[in-house]
Image 1 (spheres, rainbow, N blue to C red):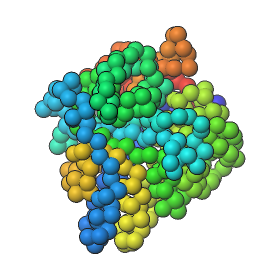
Image 2 (cartoon, one colour):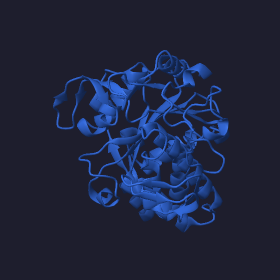
Image 3 (cartoon, rainbow, N blue to C red):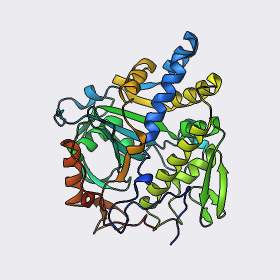
Image 4 (cartoon, one colour):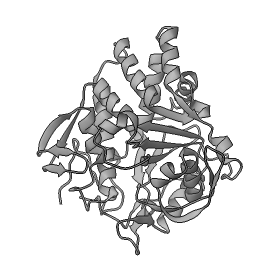
Length: 361
């Protein structure tokens, strides 16, 4: 089986030899780049432009919504950020050919771990089809939703909201999330269009009627709408599950970073503002980051992170025995992975191997 590629980067969520090449483990850099762009835009613009950017950002009080039912904040835990890509079909997203699904779902989920005072970082992808135990959560209207087992991870967002996603991830991992960052489909499209598109190369034709993607083998310049189709494609890639899509998402983010790096953003304040405007309009964060100033301060705190050492891996999963279209956290790999994050230890190669290999080439 052949999968689409971007440059020489592998899409495989796990490599037969144990551990994927380091060059494909840099997807988590995109959130750092987001914060840097916000900082650049905020530092050199007039107050009214700053105010416009600041007013774009939406905030959620995660601490109030979850309360005290959370993992302990350990002195060795560094910074942990839950990053979600949401796929609401409402509003501007309704015109993006993203499927006929009610409500919104967390289509992409990354737990980004930044060790205290170091230059290394890791981003852990959680497959959207993973079956989890959803904890008891409070909804925004004050009502309570009971705990439920065998709930698909990406449905938690639509059923209860972002605070419950944070609580679910915390109970799944035992890792306390310091911050929450969400970017939606329409904003993603606007970002790609703002930089003039992204170039990708695919090894074979892709015709996915579900996402709308229709590409022949070769190199293509994708606009915002096509980029959304690319990162959402799952049919005709791998085994048709979410695991193959994670590989495409990892590839695309690297291509997106490469494209932004080519552009002289520091030398073009107008371009920097345009991109920052698209990003902030698409962002929802926890209340601790819900302003341009707070985001800029947080971005400065991450200055020591060296993108070349950042690693992106997938939560080890196995096919569910009852429903093979779903996956569950693979043990003991998943527990070993989360323990390493909690203790700020190096993640063993054995904890990165996933029995479910639907996205492997």
